[in-house]
Image 1 (cartoon, rainbow over the protein chains, first blue to last red):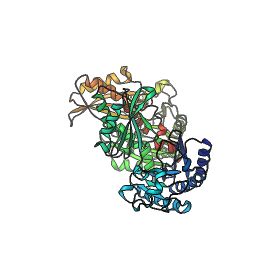
Image 2 (image 1 turned 30 degrees about the vertical axis):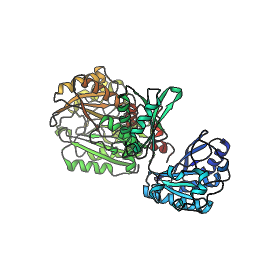
Image 3 (image 1 turned 90 degrees about the horizontal axis):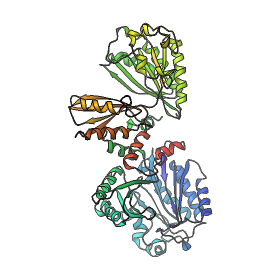
Length: 301
Length: 301
């Protein structure tokens, strides 16, 4: 498989293991796609499914995901800490190898049209597939959640991009779109005071005037009695890992607090780590093609 | 090609471009192998050829290399700064992907036997293929060079592993073996005084009591008026890049000298750079499988 797209649907069930298993099993039951990871969260009552495949492979898997989820998840009886508006809540497509962002945007629209037609679910295109700037941010679309949507959807400004302007009774609605690889990267600080992580997070994130492709929040790691600046880097090619790391480190050290270590949650592209290595070593004229695996892949070997 | 072996033969010609071209063209003319790089050095009068392929692909390419080189290079009229004992001087095989070190050792012995039989050239197995510890180090085998070998080869201790105990009149003899990936990595220091690079090199290298898999020398970069600690890291899994870098940096800074940057000569495996990124970020519980490309390769995608 030369062409690889990642797809990371989130479903609104994180407690009933048998239900999650059934949904995952049916979703996986097709060609040109592999499910890499299934992460249920009981507090959030939500499961994140990570799969990779060809465009065709992930497209068909998403249709199977809806088939399997709809009879199993009823949002009218769903409770959980995480905000949600659909049984299948959000479906992002991410270009990984041999497929462009444009192709992933086209794929997301094809899937959105198919989901709307086959399952009568209102679909909002989000992130890079969004049809207007209000819909780029998922949080903006989801505002009001499942319970508020019957009212919100009547507003012409919130007419779905595909499907009926009426919420599906049990499955709500869904956001589908294409986005860049997102790197979830946390920096742990040697202090029990969460206000320090909070303050740093507020300064380094985009909405606070900080790094363009950085979302951040302070988190207390209660058991370890330390705190963490928890981040999503939404475009590592422009806001690289090392830049966020160095800024946090400097701001912490200025207060006499040291960095204990970092966490990489989930996955990252190899070049994001090559950039880190190159930053710290400052290798003159470094080219990715100096890495065996990159050079071999370029020659199709 | 799931299986990839690297082969980096050195031939004793770095000046006559037409001769080098002819040799490379004939070497490349076969299946399951690609020549990635050809680096002639006029001062050394020597060319380094880098190729990748299956075991079969690189084996056949090496036979073609000897076929093309023997009529073209006559060591009796060869002069150059680099020590040499053969027209084809040394042929290392390096496991890169889907092939083990054991397989590369076996491959080197198969090629050694073939070269000896087809071309009547004495062959010494070296590095990890060596049949006794005296032959592990190429410099040890090569001592005396082409001119001294007619005498040296009579010594029973230097009986070739394959082929006649008599030097080939024009092509000399050759060392063939399997080795680990070698990373050529240099650290540039902000001083014109080469004795400082020399002193650091002597301390960090294995023979000086330093790092186990590190060879090092001080080099003056005359034009830039700076110096460099030039290294070969012969097993990056045990002597990682960051360790050599940090040691040199500390030793330089203690003398008030800063590191200007580094050079990666040729290629390195991706994991060697992941290790650098992980060292500087100290990512808790980092696993290579968190890199997309690694995870996908593991699933054969």
